[in-house]
Image (cartoon, rainbow, N blue to C red; front, side, top):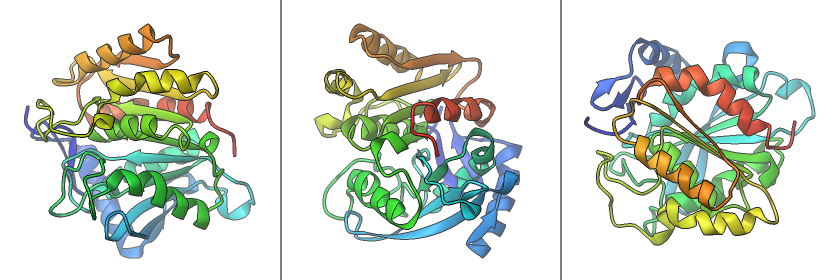
Length: 293
């Protein structure tokens, strides 16, 4: 295998050096049209907005795709928010490749989906970590962006109304950011992810702060679980070439700590067909552990 599941462009998703297939190629055409308009309507009446967010942590302007449920404009309800992290390594426009999820907002919701930009040209694989001035991705994603979304949209602005989810490297990011910020997120889900910082191949660890190792955060989760529950779910394909063993290890560690969680191994590999086939169910499970709209 080559790179782990990174979004190499809007038009393609790199999965072990192979493109994800016809589904994402068709998606690219939809995304290109959407980006010209800035705002567009998806399947089931969901409306997507490409937001530009000023970030001190990242010393610049960042983007996020915000998908609103079909009844957002006709109601005064507040909605739970699911932050969805894309794979790495990636370009600055990779967040747009998550547009295929917009059709699921009506089916799994109602909720607000936020797909943040998780990379920049020249900074393609920061692993969603804080690295110092101008590269503090964790701070941006767990502090600045939620503040912006809560200020500009009708959200349930608490951990009971906020989840973080991701696929591949985004799954690592979701688990790592979620467990390091239990006061911000009430639900955490990893789709074909891993649990320690790696290089782009997914095979080798990289030097990183202790907080970057999700395995080391289990004791923190166990202590926090006594006063406020956090939903933790993670799933992987049986034929995933890199991450099955670590997902099974994490399952055993959580079992050993008596922490409730959801874990499953599915037929399939590190591929879009697995994620698309189960995304609605996985998102519904997340939402069942948050406050309703």
